[in-house]
Image (cartoon, rainbow, N blue to C red):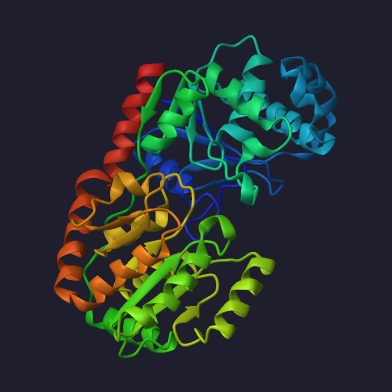
Length: 410
């Protein structure tokens, strides 16, 4: 089976954060004997790594861009109002994909995200006489919208029409959460399959060796979490649509609700303006001893980082199937999350964590107090998290389901 994956910026090694979930998927597909190539929108040159061929755009492809202008006929009329440089990138990427189809003769195109990977793949297909099936995986940003935070591809000028056309014309649509499956159908998608993301349950696990224990103790010391009754991790980007301000609000409430010492540890890159507001709030409310920001954490360190936490929270206001929650679950940690997106698929309240209403930071704080005051429940829920991870979200099981899905289209 020969698969051409459309993923614009996926990395070529497991240490790269961007589109890491795509890297994990394609390398495992290759291990299962599939011939896997990736069409990227980069200029670093062609690379073969981990039995996968990563094809970047070469200089020659820029010369063929005028030929791509014929594909403007496939655009929804309103979508032609998009900025010229974005139209140019879409056409260039589609020409790159079309060239790879002719060169590699794949059995199937698999695009990650409806825009702009799915749209560029669709343009490539429409521009060829060759009939080839297209599958699109929806991850969240390409479908979900939060207008107040300008979050979501569909909010950009002309993109909503592109996304709808991709959903309507693709042969199959993979939704990583049940919410996304419903949204995709409402936007006109046909043949929607719910297939949640998976996690490597060997890399992310709940066992701790003596050497790991020493490292964990050093980490907690670095975080200023020695003697804390509960260490709470949040490992996503520090951005408004991820609701990080609700963590700060919850930290303030905790001082009223309990005498237990609860330490928050945040990791990830940040939006400078938003981060500045959070820092000013923390200083005004004297929260500097309650919240520690680690900066961006190397991916290879994350298994130990989860083990150094007691519970992992998620305050995102919209979601697909967040890898950080799956990783924490595989690491045997209770999860506390706003009830949005795929979090509702992986958390059973009272069993492996708690779901709380979005924006309800008081309920979030109350659940954390419960865990801080009932350490036996942390152990019980953590064990249940690990069990659910092995049963339902093991990436190896997911890959087998994906391969079986491919076979239905070839």
